[in-house]
Image (cartoon, rainbow, N blue to C red; front, top):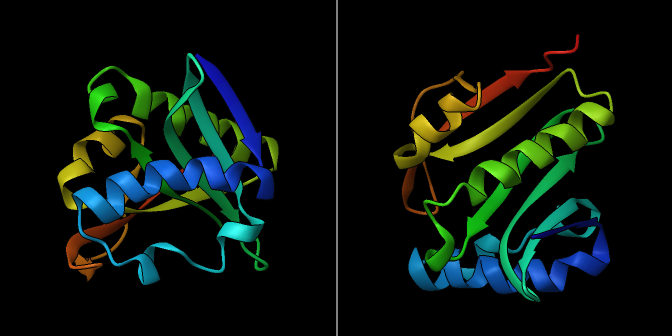
Length: 143
């Protein structure tokens, strides 16, 4: 499995996965799924035999806050540790960029997945794109 990191050039391949998962499967409006962060984010792409199968992005805001988002795995590859691999690589990138902590806006059905990675809930449940979410955070273990 090949892992690719990049900024603008990775977006098109990442977008194909996000479109299938968020827009087609979860009915997230395209106007919400695409945002101003995509152009400046680090995009991670996992590729299996030339097929993009999973993606996620790391946003580094101007205020120094780090946010992982748009984590998506194609249906045929779920339950095989691919999502965990995406998250571990995004966290490794954040820690290499000297992040103190990383935030994620997690769909509540995935709460246990993120807790198993070390994330803690830091806020009340809210609705985003018509689905319940919670904000979660993880601190850099190296600090």
